[in-house]
Image (cartoon, rainbow, N blue to C red):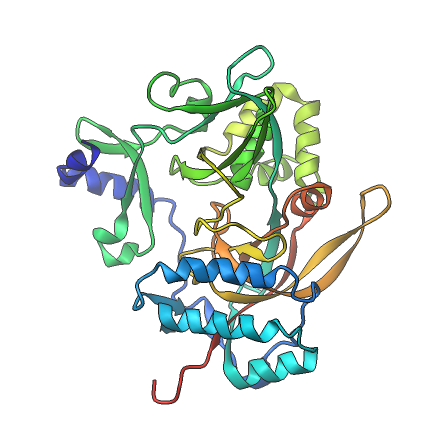
Length: 400
């Protein structure tokens, strides 16, 4: 029934919604990656001694095996088919199984691979942040303690691939709902939190007790809900309401409620706990809302492959190929005996682009998945450092 309605949407309705959608569109660079000469290659290394990288590469290969062989992946001004992306990952996987030295790694890449660097922001740098898999307490039924719903995808939520209407909307999607054959914007966070979806429109996966934890589950995109009856639900991003992401951290800085140098997820949570009277207005500043589905394993990224702690990153899928072999120069926290951050340490590491995010927009943003647990939560909550991002792909055979 939904597909039949979509086919008969009135042209004026589509044009109206497109105008709403494009009101907040940012300029997308045509070539977010610059191909480097070998003399400009970074000094390659891996602070994790390649641990976890084979598993992450294999998960990307499993994803690519299911794609058309001639599907093209764009690396800046260049394009490569699925078959070549597979060959590139396979060759690197075989090579690192020998745990090569830094010198062997340098020689291998210079001989067999092309290297591209993200153009980054106006200073040619990439801002790295982090995310993790949060744990929440929940219940299958609503009660006095567990009062905040984790929603599944609503029945009336419609997603349209805009590239079918015009090439200029490549990799853009539009989300809304039907109203008398017109497509209109979907409900925002405030409306949903006020209960507009309660009833038959959306299923409720579980109820949790803390609205702030639920808000950050939306930000992270996946998590585990430990139920009162002893069960565990692995929940994963399914869809969003299509509203733009707005940072409540930026709001709190702009309103001088948290100093910029103190900003972190942990600091935001502390402020909201100390000022419950401001809770609704602050959370509703971000109109974006996420709907979930349950999985048997996780967390899963945008490609529906299991993310690997320290090896999976989220990038803007409109600009960067997913999945691709990526090399980053970033920073990680060093904790003291009490679990507090003692210092920040620069590191170099190979990762795989397997995810995306509503706040990860442009060539100057990247999000590192840290896993779960205390260190992951600390790293994800505090990381906001600039570095460099490179993508690698095997050289084409002569004549191609």
